[in-house]
Image (cartoon, rainbow, N blue to C red):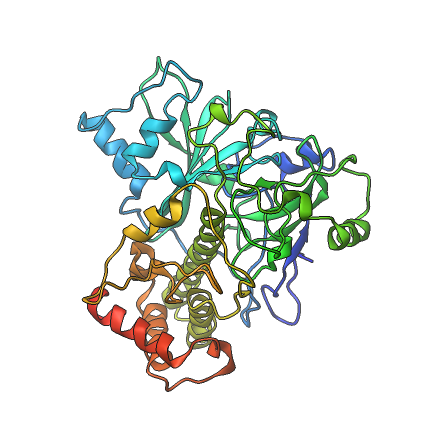
Length: 455
């Protein structure tokens, strides 16, 4: 269970589940704990809370001083708006406001739409199973829209600062301006649990009731390593996945405080997941015509869980190593190894749960996703999907091309690249990477040599 712990000199320990109540917006939605409302986005969560990273061997210490941002996609868009180079169009015929125009300006595909019906974010009053919140994303930006809500919610990954959170008022009369809300949002979106927070993205799975509240505000993390059967509680899911079941599309008939924590865990273990399985049409569950797309694509959900997790680990490593180097810490080398290995394992899907049966989406997102990104001379790409036994055909994260990866402090970036070469060359045959076949290693190595400058 997720806890705030610092035992045996360790800042964090490995956790997979959480009992919530620490975030005001969730406490309010679940009817427990504090009820003050903050402006925390919760863009990628079914409920907003603080989740922890892997075990460390370092002492707690303040967050390093922030560097001046060199810009992120939302800041760049704001500059184009201010200069008149670009304009946003307000949709008067629907209640979507700037949504479609913002997605186009940020190059975010509509097919990436996923729908979360558990009450999350500061605008939780606008979210319910009959009015789910829509989330859209590309490699670096995430946009959330709830019907009738006064603002769009956005998160953008800055190359050095990690996730930055914004809102955009849905007001046609005003001049479009993205307002940064990072300080407010890290009340929940905090990776470090220290005096100074480290921002992170969240994607979690809850046991939702028919009002969209999380029962006992209990949740489980959702990424490549999460058991398939525990993913996407509180989300709508469209697509086929055979007999491997998940928690999406399912609601329970009980009050948010009907069970205690142990009872929730037992209930989830015995939950009948079949009513939510292999759903390809959501029109009988809510009015899908109110949305840009009628789907909440399963492939998009899988990629969302992958890339938010990798973004978070890159951010944490960057903050910690930058801080250690600035302070000339004697623990720097050890911290580089620990953080670098965390990033490397996540990027190579070292602990990912294999697919037992093929997965197929319905929105066209899989095809659109695979068309992006560089290809080698044989036409291969790290964005090629497998979806039969695993997520990617060539199991190395496409975020190796991201600016945030390249902007990691030199010691940890160089460590990750050196270790990656050792693994792909076959020099490292450790158990962590046993799932990589010789063909996998050779293919990834060849793709990187042609598509990753300086590799």
